[in-house]
Image (cartoon, rainbow, N blue to C red; front, side):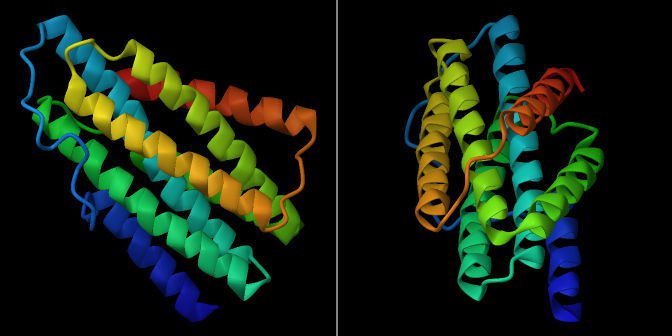
Length: 206
């Protein structure tokens, strides 16, 4: 447990300090960056900031859920998913830099809140823990699909990143489902969506 806590603390520091790495190439890296109007660039940056914040939350959730998982196989699954999510974190941060913008100023708050939620989900049972992943990834997949539609038509680089992220999130949800996830009660699913809506609205601007 002590080793897990130390590893978790190190992951939190790397996540919040921006020292995330990706083993896969950034999607769309071979696409020439389009000339966007100031409004288009600002909107694209706002959407990518939301996605970057979502990946901050994903790191916190997976760290907390791995910490509380009873089954070593499930703990390993969370660790593998977290590594892919770290790639998303690196991609979105890079794209924000290309758009001459910054991550959310409230990322430490988002991380802490998501970690607490992950602890609660994992404390229930492994099946509920996995069910939380399934529902989270379902909602993330929905919002990434929305971002694909909202991004400026010319911003193919951001769209390529979001599309790859969406595919990865769908796969993570399917893996959790096949590992024995249970469906979460409707009020819990609604509360999760409401919390995510607040995060998206705030992170878009701050």
